[in-house]
Image 1 (cartoon, rainbow, N blue to C red):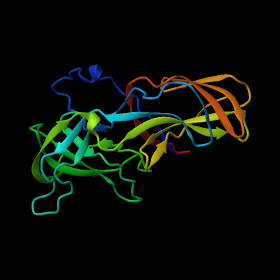
Image 2 (cartoon, helix red, strand yellow; image 1 turned 45 degrees about the vertical axis):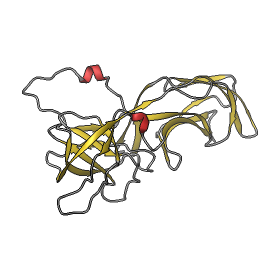
Image 3 (cartoon, rainbow, N blue to C red; image 1 turned 90 degrees about the vertical axis):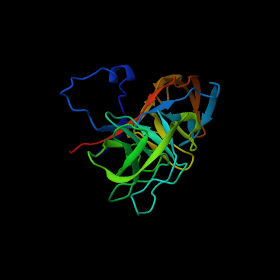
Image 4 (cartoon, one colour; image 1 turned 135 degrees about the horizontal axis):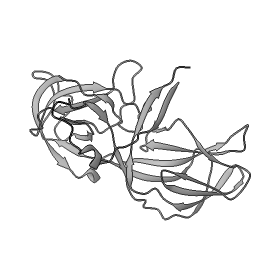
Length: 254
C-alpha cells in the first residue's frame, strides 16, 4: 500500500552537530518547505465537500537562479538562464531542483536537479529523480543524489530570497466529507498549487453529529459547529504557525 505522510523535520540546530571525521556524509535528499503566516483572519465559514477550510503559503528553504544555461557539453540545455531552482536539504553538496512540479511518469523520473559537489558556486552535475508528489502538486524530492551525476558545463548560480519564488505553493486543510459508515466529519491536509494538488493518505476527523467538535492539524485549531445542506460550519480558532513542512512516501506490504 502506497502511503504519503508528513516528514519529521529535524531542526537546523540538530543538523549542525558535527559527525566524526571518519563518518561518511549522507547523500539523502529531503525537500523541506516553510509554512508562512496566514494572510486571512480566523473566523467562521461554511465549507462543502473538497472545499478549503484554510490555505497558507509555502516557501522553500532556499531558492536559486541560474546565471547561464545548464546542460551537457555539446548537448541541449535542460535549464535556461534565469531558471529558478529550489534548494533540497542534504549534506556534502548543494543540490537544487526544478521549482516547477512535474507530474510523475509511470516509468522513469520526472524531476531534474543540479548538484554543486565542491560548493564553489557552480553546478557541475545533473540527475533525474522521482517527484513523490505524484499528482504534480509541488516539487518533492526523496532519495539520494548520485556520487557522480551526469556532467554538465559548469554554470554559476545566484541565491534569491525564497519569497521571490515564481510559482505559488501552499498547504491547507480541506473538507474531506462525511464518512458513510461512521460518525465522522473528515478533514485532510493537502498541498500544491492552483493547477494541481496532492493530499496526505490519512484523514483526521471530528464527530459529524455532536457539536461543537474541535480538531488540531499542523497547529491550526478548528471547531466544527454544525452541518447543514451538505456543508460543515467551521470556526478557525487559530491558523497554522510558521513551521517546516515536508512529506515522505512509503510502501507497506500486506
